[in-house]
Image 1 (spheres, helix red, strand yellow):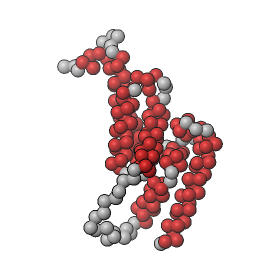
Image 2 (cartoon, helix red, strand yellow):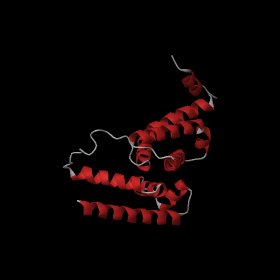
Image 3 (spheres, one colour):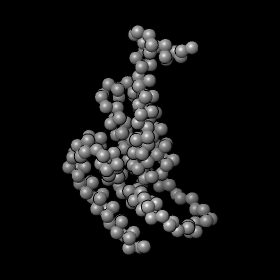
Image 4 (cartoon, helix red, strand yellow):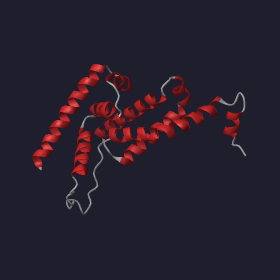
Length: 184
C-alpha cells in the first residue's frame, strides 16, 4: 500500500509539493548533524538550546521550502537561518537574561584529571563569552571551514567585516586562554 504522498510522486505530473516534501526530508537527513553542530557552537554549547534553535529553524525552513529550493543552495540558506536565529536568541537574552538555578551542591565540583576535557570546556566557555557576531564568524570560518567570501555571504556582510571580526575574536580567545593559564 502506498501513501498519498508516494502516489503523488510516482505518478507522472505528481504534486510538486509532495516532491518538495521528500526533498526536505532528504535535506534534513543529510545535513542535520552539521546544522546541529553549528547551532550548538553558535548558541554557546548549550545542547537543549541548540536543539530548540535547530528545530525552530527547520520548522521555518519547511514552511518556506519551495522558495528555498528555488533559490539554489538550501544548506547555505538554512545555515544562515541558524546563525540569525542564534544571534536573535542572544539579543533576547541580553534584554532579559536568564537567572541561574543554584543547586545545594554548588561549589563541590570535583577536579577533572583529563586535560583534554578541561581544554575543550575552556574553549567552549570562551567561545560562548564572545559577542554573537564574532562567535558566528569563528564557527563558520573554523568549524564549518568556509572561506571569508562564503562566510560573508552567509552573514550578509563584507569580507572585510569577516576579517576584522575573526581577528578580534581570535585575539579575545587568546586573551581568555592566557587568563585561564595564569589561574592554573
